[in-house]
Length: 200
Image 1 (cartoon, rainbow, N blue to C red):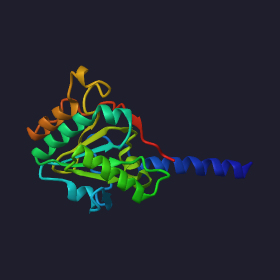
Image 2: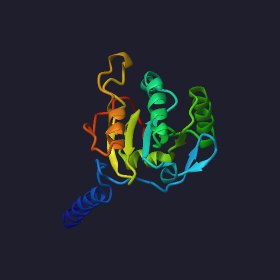
Image 3: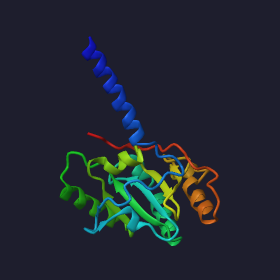
């Protein structure tokens, strides 16, 4: 009985320590995994820190195939181009790579990126390391960081991921504009709807 009690105490302590070690990624949090080396579809190795430009960094969890990715193709291109035009670095992250070797994943990403005419980074996330660090669960899901690499917005591109024609609020675009104006984002967190990032 004493052993069972000790094991229960140990389990509770481990859970508590895990929560302390991996804090929730809230607005104001620093850029996670900033110096982890990532493989871009082009073959180049980058880090999030190196991808950041003078006005900050936009990180978006994305993928090659998913109904929500398909519905957001144009919006993804538009917002990424807008960010780059304002000296905000852009990194798209593909975390749905479980069960597939890296060469196959990168080849598929290269084909997809070429078809979408990406001129920003699109990297593979081995073992969902970045998705876990960002607490990302959906595609597309966006994280905007300022010049000091602090999170200023997280969530959806806009208020209707499923239907571009019904969009009323362009959350990410508004957050970028607020950040560039030196203001806090009027809306700094929204719910990202999309395809699930698989973790297995």
